[in-house]
Each structure stands twice: as structure tokens, then as C-alpha cells.
Image (cartoon, rainbow, N blue to C red):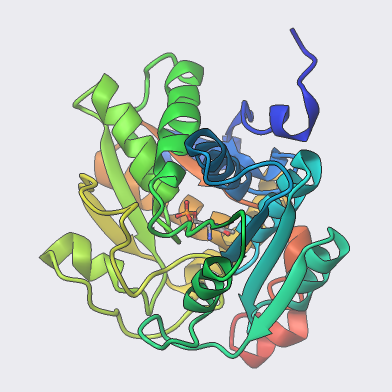
Length: 323
Ligand code: PMP
């Protein structure tokens, strides 16, 4: 059975890729779930589909309806494709600080894109709050609400987590991921821990995010510094992340994750975005903490092609001391 039904049918069932160099270096099996191979190019295709399907099932979204979302990029890309394939209108609100490639791609895909100034979550001008208000004023429309809509983590529980268990034959000791909405980490860790209580779940967090301290102290509080990574890190505990059993957290600085993105390209042959660098650095830290002989799974979230202007621009990196 190798034919899948349309764009939506092609989401998921991604390969689990062993990273040979990094595995040899640690004596562990370091495995990356190849989410960049989803048809919309990222892990967020899964969340977008899970949210749309849940809204269709509940009757909130009917034929010809509109999907509105505030998104830093990848969820919007997934939604735009799914909306085209399903006959919905797609409206995206995005902070203007996001990369031009992502904004251009969304428009090319046919989404109606509104850029707004970057504002903190508590501000009514925050992109997610603007998106929620827009959907509220429309007929037959949903606000996808990926951060607090737990259809997101349920999608990862049912698909990503189940696939990792099946692909490893249950031989998995740890799962680690950076979070944006928390859907991936929450859904996958639940699915794995339910099958074996011995599986550990770890968070990889970029500097400036509040979740490293949340895992260690129980209260979110920003770590020092900042990060050029996109789509990850959070100032708050989302409904998706809430009540997730996380065993430990690692804070991964850009001086570690950016060189890893280049190692993945030059040594492993994988052209990936910045969050994948954070995730693989996290997997190495987890492997060192566990010791040789363990299997550590992480997520290769999206491809490098979305980051030419920054991560793959040597001058831009040099200006930030990351060349
Ligand atoms: N990496 C990238 C590139 C992303 O766009 C996102 C989602 N914003 C994540 C990682 C984190 O995934 P999640 O929202 O499931 O926590």
C-alpha cells in the first residue's frame, strides 16, 4: 500500500533517520524523526491537520469555511496547503519579525497574510490575539489556536508518538524536543511513556525561553540571553504543554546549535533549520547523561531552505558572532 490520498494523506509516516556520526560519537543510537519530509515541509503539518480534522468533526468548520491562525510560519504553511486541498480560505497573522521567506511562501500558497508588530502575549496586539479576534467576527470560521488547542498534542500522540514506538520496535530510552506550542513534546512523550514507563522525556530549550526553569523549578522564568532560532521557546506554559511529565531540560545556546546545523549538513548530509540543531544538541546531551547503549529520539523539524537570509547567510551570522 504505497499510494496515499491527496496532500492530507501524505502527512506523517516520516522516516526515522539514524545519525551515524553522532551515534558513533556518543555510543548511543541518535535517531531523528524526519518531519522536514512532510508534504508542507515541517512537523507542523501534523498539528495543522489534527486541528482542522477536530474542527470538522465537531462541526465548527463546515465546507467553504475559513481557518484563521496566528503563526510564526510553519503552522501557517501547513494550514495553507490543507486549506487549498480541502477548499477552505486561510487567513494568517504573523509577527513582522519573522523571515521574509516564510511570509513570501505563505502568500504564494494563497493564504491571506496580515503582518503585525511583534508584541508580548499579554498585549492585545499580539499576533495570536489578533487572529482570535478576526475569527470571532467571521461566519463559519475557526481560530486554529495551536498553542492551547489540545487537538495539536492529540495529533502527535496518535501519529508521531505511535510511529516512533513502532519504528524503534519499542527500543527507545529517551525522547527530546524543543517546544513552540509544546504539541510535539507533549503528544510524543505521552504516547511513549504510556507504552513504557521507563522512557524519559526531555526538553531542549533555547536561551531566553521560560521553560528550562519551568521544568527545573515548576515556575516559568526566562533564562538569560536570546536566540536566533525560530518557532521554538516560550514565555508561558501552553495548554498543550500543561501536565506533561518532563524528566529534565537542557538549555542549548546558539553557539552550540548553529554549528550543529552545519555539522548535520556537512557530516550527516541533512539540510535543516535551527530548531533541528537545538534538538540534536539536546539529543547529544541526553545521550551523555544516559551513557552509551541507549536510544535517543529527536525531531528534525524543518528544512534549511526556509532560512537562507539568516541561518545560512554567513554575513548575518558573523554580525552576531555565530560565523
Ligand atoms: N521547530 C519548528 C521549525 C517549528 O516551526 C516549531 C513549531 N512552532 C517547532 C519546532 C516546535 O513544535 P511544537 O509547536 O510542536 O512545540
